[in-house]
Length: 345
Image (cartoon, rainbow, N blue to C red):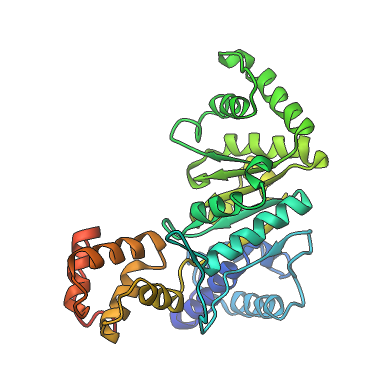
């Protein structure tokens, strides 16, 4: 294909598309293509950078992207699905803390999604980077108002994430059923699980979903299909890669599940303002601005990394002023990372 438009113009448009898809995980390049005169493969290949940008491609993609951004086409909820992106407040007035647990925006947003899926018997997808606090947020939600008895939390491991028989057998045990051993009885166990959920509906919460095989996700979708009308909702917790898999995969299993998602929530983890409030609450007040910026970049929004750093500073630093050199040593000790002073700029 002839290169009619410069790489700079093409890359700028591709970046705008990626940013748009990041805020709208329910959409993909194929959805944009439906509103153009171009083939699906052409739009997808252009957005992925696999073909150079011709004038017509640039013109059409720019036109539909603008329409989508303005809400003229592809509005959230067009197929009964909504998108709840992470909020980024500019100021944190108060950050509640309970037993070393902070109620961050991530925690509050996770609770909103769980409540929504309970009330609407919907499927929700919550994604955030490792360590952002998804699992702890769910645990906090389940501790409230007897929710632990009204929900079931399942964490995938290396076996259940690739073995649908192992999945249904474990679910059966969690529902106080006696699963018959062997692969030949898996169908009976599956139906018994569905019947048990029909009699005792609850919210099904699945963690570590980023590693789950499509055929196992198909089982989750079929369980929800058979139990939704009885009051069963479902929430999937995952790293951000799941959004790309569900949005871009051509596999029937993922497509069937994606079409049933009722609410998407791509979250960003701990914000810079929240981190400042937490560090201050933990008694670390003597810290250079450059050092704090460097520390913020090193944590990458991870609550796990942040609290590990806080604990180490409180134990070893003795209340002295935290400098860029301190943060560099912290990163090397905890994560084996090398960050040089001045990197915060």
